[in-house]
Length: 481
Image 1 (cartoon, rainbow, N blue to C red):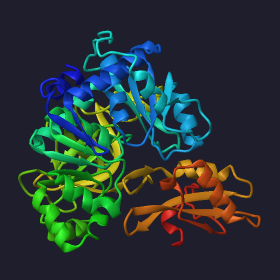
Image 2: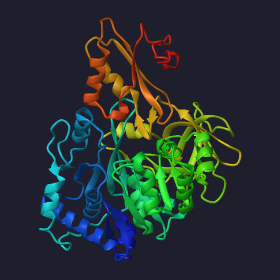
Image 3: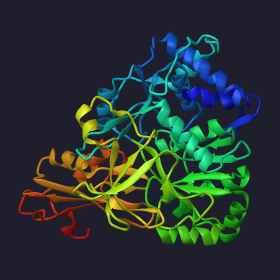
Image 4: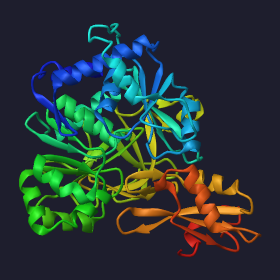
């Protein structure tokens, strides 16, 4: 089976039902099917073949959905790129994935050549829905390459297959009881697997009605909830923290319509979960996933959604806690989380050794530390690496550290995560310099080269970085910024 077999349950089986609300317009599933088929015909006319990569650098829009479905229909590998990325980040991805084309809406940092969305839209009328060459995808066919930062600082492309997406979609639709009666508000970015693999796929498989927002805007969130009356909402901890600012009467009205709030992409503080339940009348369902694995573990829809935990492995997925010596951890004993199942990616694009290093006996080594309770609930305890998760975005300090070390006057650099009230944690930079370094100029260079969420919030000059006898930086000994 391939993804279109599942998507067609809605695109063809519910073709007359309103499936999407975007920019105050309503689209039936049949219209979405036709739009994506026209886009597929256009891509084929421009020389795309199965296996070619199509990169998109777009905010949430209906055309992004058109392009994604067109890629699935034609065997093209979809490569979504974070819209916040700058020239340095874009250059690496475009070089590594070698896409046949990049689609954007406006200029691209670095001046990379891109097909403009406005031009594609004008050309669509020249193509009909019956101009698509039949492509036979299998479950093992690559559907997307999604880039996730690596601990070496080099971004790696996770190859996600049809089977990966299918198992993930079926699991969340089944376990979270998503049906065509749901109304789904999606404000997360589609370049991230949270919105793409969970949001978009749950929508198309279940046949519910989805309202797509360009982004989550706190100042307009109450209006969106109250006017659309969603029964289903996916968010990250930062979003739920913002929602706690709503007046109690508005929170009560929102809570009266909705049946399920889901949180992921970063740990949800237990006190936020408790405060949200008190205000909205709903216990947020927290789950655990990664770009390379999609969803691994989830609190139950029916049953205790235990604060601070991520719940149980989803159907067909095995998870275990492994100690540094490779042995299986006991109950409540901390180790690294290993996972195995049909959700696990096929490997890193063009990185055979990195792929081999990521697996042990068929299990993917997540790099996340955790424990499992006597009754089977998994709790994450932190990260084996020094990964920072800020507002749901992954930040690997090594990437910023390498850039800082390239700058004149910087002898040593370390970047760590520090607590932040709404984003969970944010990066902070520590610099060793033997000159009168201009920190404002250094900060400006970072702004020109990196997405805003990766930028250090503070730059601190220190006489030396604390190190072990073997030279390893002891980041926990750095002073608070």
